[in-house]
Figure 1 (cartoon, one colour):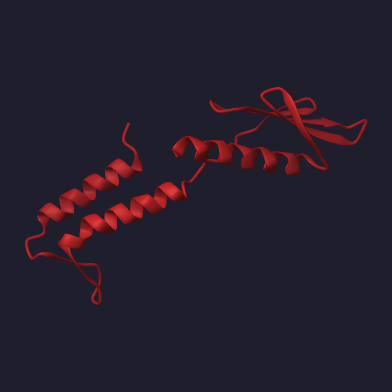
Figure 2 (cartoon, rainbow, N blue to C red; figure 1 turned 135 degrees about the vertical axis):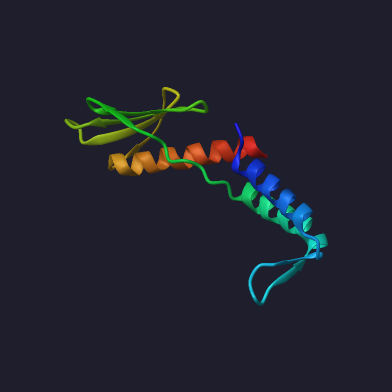
Length: 121
């Protein structure tokens, strides 16, 4: 399975080989020397690694519980309608109570993103 990064590197590599003039013209005002292309690519990918796009958690609903299971963690947001409470569980451990399911789901998303970024370091 090709990643976007792999595909982008391949396309840039092909573009560098095709150029015969030693310059890339992006528009009528910007000229980049081919020697600078590799540095530009490295900077762009480092920026992409430091700010990865992480998908939103996908939730299923069953009764009073909302579930989102990932390879990293399992999240449960449990609404107790009778007691007017919303609890957030990560891997079956109670983490915290919230006022609304949306607040709890946002906290789950933040936790998920933090864990994914820790794996990328």
